[in-house]
Amino acid sequence: MLLLAQLFDSQMLVTLAIFGMFAAGAWWLLELMAAAKPKAEQRLEEIKHPTRKRRKSLTDGGKESSAVAKVLEKASPTFAKPLRPTSELEASKLKQKLSAAGFRGESATSIYLGMKLVGLIVGLVLGGGTMLIVKGMTQDALIKTGLVAGLMFYLPNGFVWFMTKRRKDNIFFALPDALDLLVVCVEAGLGLDQAMRKVTEEMKTTYRVISDEFALCNFQLQMGRSRAEVLHELGARTGVDDLRSLASILIQADKFGSSIAQALRVQSDSMRTRRRQLAEEKAAKTAVKLIFPLVLFIFPGIFVILVGPAAITMVREMFPAMQGHAPS
Image (cartoon, rainbow, N blue to C red; front, side, top):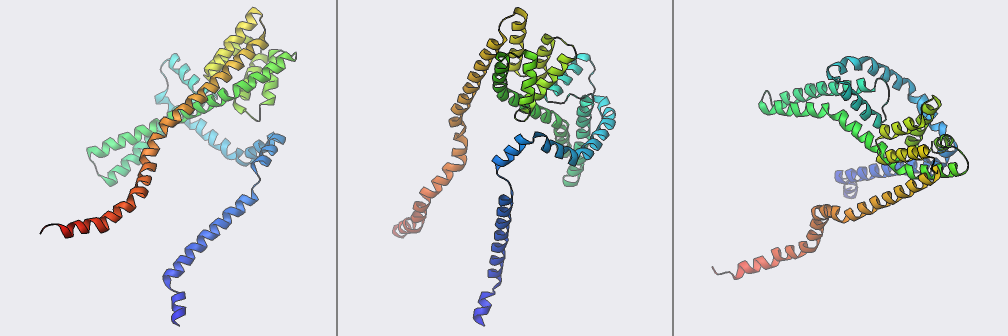
C-alpha cells in the first residue's frame, strides 16, 4: 500500500501529466512536419502551376477582401477630408509616395488619409480610456494619451515606409537578372519593347514586383506613349536609383542610336559590382554589431560559468576561515 501511495503521489502525477503534454505536442509537430511537402516540391509545384496558388487565394478570400475594400472606399473620403493636401504639389508627392509602395489605385490616397484619422481616433479612445482607468484625470495620463494617439496616427506612415523599402529591395536584387535576360533577348534580335514583354512573362513567378513594373511599361507603350516618357516614369514611379539610371541610359541610347545591348550589359555589370560591395560592407559591419550581444548576453554567461565555482568555493571555505582567524 505504501508503494502504491508513493507511485500515485500528486507530485509524480503532475510530472507525468507535464511529460505527456510535451510528448503529445512533439508528436503533433512531427506529424505536421511529415505531412507537409518538402520545400523543393512546393517550389516545383509553384513553377509548374504558377496560377494555381493565386487562383486558390483569390477564390478563398476574394469575397471578403472585395467587401472590405468596398467599405473602405466608401468610408475613406469622409475620414480623409480633414487631412487632404491643400496644394497640388503636396497631393502629387503623396501620390508618388504611395505609388512607390505599390498602392496606385484611385482611392489609395483617400484610404491612406482615412486610416490615419481612424488611427488617431482609436488611439484617443483606447489610450484615453485606459489611462483614465489606470491613473485617473492627471497630467501624466493626458501626456500618455497624446503619445498613444500620435503613435496610432503615424502607424500608416510606418506601414507605407516598410512596403516601400520592401519593394525597392526586391527591385534592386532582381534588376541584374532582369538586365541579363534583356541582354539575351536584345542580342537574339528582339526589340526593347518585345524584350521587356518577354522579361515580364519569364520573371512573373520569381520576381513579381519588377515583372509588374515592366508589364505596366508595356501597357503604356501599347497605349501610344513614347518610350522616353515610359522609361522616365518607370524610374520616378519606383524610386529606385539604379532603375532611374537604367532609364536614363536607355533613353540616351535610343536617342543617339547606340547599342542598347551594350548599354544594358554595362549597367548589369555595374549593378552586380555594387551589390557585391554592399554585401562586403554588411559583412564588415558584422564584427561591430556582434559586440553588443556579446557584451550583454554571452560574456555574462561565460563569466558566471568560469568564475561561479571559484566564488562559491571562496564563500564556503575562505571567508569562514578568515573569520575564524580574525582577532576577537
